[in-house]
Image (tube, rainbow, N blue to C red; front, top):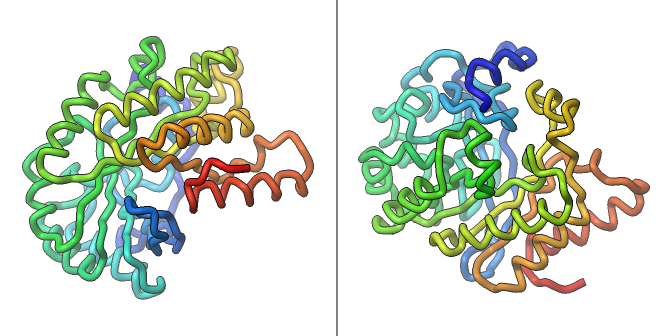
Amino acid sequence: MPNNREVVAARPEKVSGLDPFRPYHFLHEQEPGPDGRLRRVNTVFLTNRECPFKCVFCDLWKHTLDEPTPEGAIPAQIRYALDRLPEAEVIKLYNNGNFFDLKAIPRSDYPEIAELCAGYERVIAENHPKITGPQIVQFQELLDAELEIAIGIESIHPEVLPRLNKQISGDDIEHAARKLRETGISLRGFILLNPPWLTDPAETRQSCLDTIRFAFDAGFETVSIIPVRTGNGYMEKLEADGAYIPPDLHMLESVVREALSWQRGRVFADLWDVRPFWPGSSESYEKWESAMNKLNLHQLNQD
């Protein structure tokens, strides 16, 4: 079973020169809201302390700090990004880990963060299922907006989830989801396509669909399907050992279309940097990407 030491030992170097008072990236995009209407979204990728959970597939640690995030740094990052972004209805505060890890986002910064989010109708943050303390409700009560928490479900395959080194079970996810929903928090789940240790295409596809169904059954309103890639050292090792194969983008489309046909919630395909997985020409990829963007935006299961 992989452990933190092995995962960290396989890594290349982190990105150097990160400024704790600047976000490492930000962008403006669109996505449909719960009612189907398109919303403008400002996404801020925060620079903060590295996540304590060392998942075997993760490469997000590259833009993190080794020390606890200084007080005042996160509001400064959000202000910096919002000064450069257009107006929007939704803000995503993504931080390569857990928003409610008090060493990543200091509790003392909550009031100023909430003030910076004034005017947004929805605030979306990422968090691990095991970090569900009272600080979540504290932050929620400071917001004028609805709070949505994005959780990495990854895969509920019984032989995969225990080996991802995420240190959770399906029961942990269901418990966290129930606890958060009781306080009126919306849920978004991140689900992996082609996680390691699933190399049979039929099993890979079915397991992804099973995980999506699990998410909806647990009360998640939204899921995002993320093709798993190499890039963190440990995934390269698994690929060399035959325990990981790159994702099939036609399978990604098939999974999204089938899950949308259930009409149980929003289903997004994560298209970030998936071009290397496309087997055809640039022209055919651009056509496919355009169709997938329309699918993400309009959630209509039509060719």
